[in-house]
Amino acid sequence: MRERFAAVPTAALVDVMDDLGLREQTLPASIVALARGMRLAGMAFTVEGRPSEHGDWDAAIRKTLAMLGAVPAEHVAVYQCNHERSAHFGELSATSLASRGVAGCVIDGGCRDVRLIEELGFPVFARFVTPEDSTWRWQVTATQEPVTIGTVRVQPGDWVVGDEDGVVVVPAAGAQQVLAAAETKVGTENLVRDAVRNGVTPLEAFDRYGAF
Image (cartoon, rainbow, N blue to C red; front, top):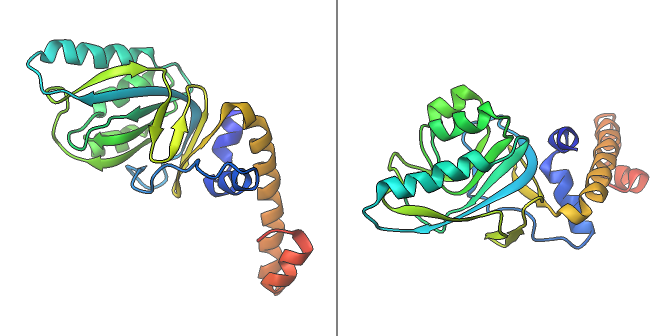
């Protein structure tokens, strides 16, 4: 399923979920890929954190490192940081996850080491970038619990798909149905594209194929 999700545009997934009444499944537009062409798909491993001005750097970093070590292969780490400053993710974190086959990371928060992560080729979608480290200012508080990002409730095991258009979340319970319908939609849109290239008007193409 991961390879199939990775091959389907997020726009097609959103259109299908809209038709099914699942209309709050797109993460905020401010969460974007660190580099053009980055794509990810995998089941969510959720992470939550909170601002924490503290003096115990060692304890805070140990929580973060334990969390990173718990993310399974082919999953996407999904962070709700609840924190408006600092980088919650960087190149060493990306290297660790990539080396174990993790599919990518989505952060409602900050990232740094952008050039190194881009060179690594590990897909990261984040809300902002900054050189400031979060360890003195933030701590992990929970993993594998539901998190809310924007208007989207992300459950552990939901499917997370990201591309140039943004990031969407497909609820695990309906994932097979959504994926199959999105694949069909992509095939239909290919027919529409060929038709309009050959001079068929948009309305005529819509009447013919039921999509545009």
